[in-house]
Image (cartoon, rainbow, N blue to C red; front, side, top):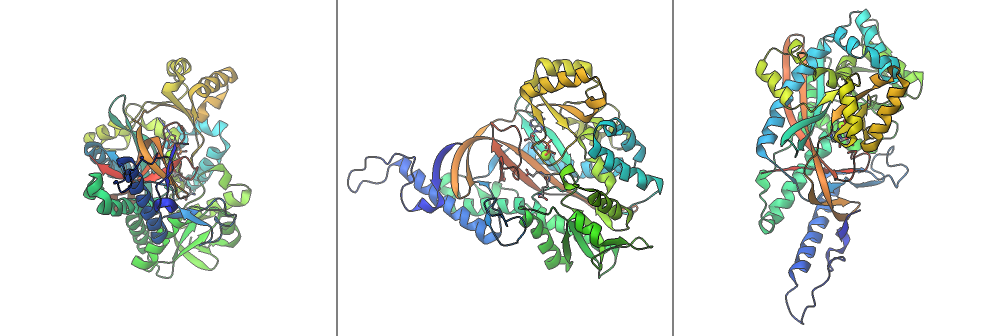
Length: 499
Ligand SMILES: Nc1ncnc2c1ncn2[C@@H]1O[C@H](COP(=O)(O)OP(=O)(O)O)[C@@H](O)[C@H]1O
Ligand SMILES: N[C@H](CCC(=O)N[C@@H](CS)C(=O)NCCC(=O)O)C(=O)O
Ligand SMILES: [Mg+2]
């Protein structure tokens, strides 16, 4: 990828890639060499900090790194310095969190809206159809979720064309990196406390990041609302999970701050070991479950057999607090994102005109493929659009010429398959040169960033117990890569330096 700048291990000697100045005997090292040595020292300090503070992920080189805790660790990929972000847009993003939290809760209560908005997608997208089927079953038995917990992340990019903060998507299930994201902010503060003077950067410009502690607080408070001291939090996880430490951070805070035990099960294990008692209590492996926290179940690959679907239904039918419930999960689909962007739709769910205006200001162009005029312009100028299927988890979007080819193919098919996609205005953040550290090596590369703001919402019947913005995730990827995704290996974990 980018220019190889320096490796942590080499901080003693001058780093390769920087031509050593022809130093006369005894002359001071040239500026280039000084800068390389400084960078090497920072990379070494940062890599050590990661290892000492659990800013780690499983190393894909080790076959057991996704199943055996403590085996095959490597520092999480990170940017060596925080990315600049204008304070005005930062404030705007933080202000939106409690409004999006409220919106999700209100939309989740309108089962007819969800069923209607997704009814055509259901015809052509099996995965969405299965989720809707569970939702329909809950509507049929008039299932009410008295206690509702949302742990969301709303992702934004700064569009340089329009100089505006635009929402990429709202995640309402398995919002990754509250644990590791918080740590990167601390890593950068530590580095700037030590090197800020010589770099001319002030560590106090990095917002404190309480994502992990506040997500754990929301989980702990939801557990308390369930009001059964022997109950546990069930974390639903994938059989292989190299991001397990991000998840363990939440379990650790839950145990240390609230005395709550978390058990980890795959969907298959829930099916094999779980049952719902006549009073609705969910019991897994003999433990009563107060809260189900999904860190799996958001992608078709999470349901390789009917067992996993049975597990999802079993948990939904229980009185445990689901995070997310099937309704919250559906509200976070891209089709609903596009439907909510239509005129007069937000007005159905929110009362405050001011809040509605704030949300709308953050909406990029979003269209269904029924809009022939937009489809036509996307075929003419595919680079200005992103074509998105109803999928989560990264790696599914369609860009550039593939947008044109796919649209033309879908038009020819003339079937309902158009309903499986949405079209979105492509957002163009400004690129900047960033030192990225992966596997102990530091590369400088042109990058663009995506700011995720976490939101926690907890309600018990009419009482809103929590509705907060809680921390953030900055992801930075090489600007040449269309997809983001830290887990997918394109992006690194970053933090924010307010300008
Ligand atoms: N409208 C857009 N403009 C530019 N990049 C986008 C846009 N939508 C998505 N992306 C890129 O694609 C990645 C994945 O898209 P996203 O909608 O977040 O899907 P997923 O649910 O798979 O994360 C984002 O992290 C971002 O890097
Ligand atoms: N391995 C699972 C990953 C869960 C997952 O993919 N979550 C989506 C929202 S659905 C997400 O937040 N994606 C941004 C993280 C990235 O850039 O890689 C976990 O960590 O629990
Ligand atoms: Mg995303």
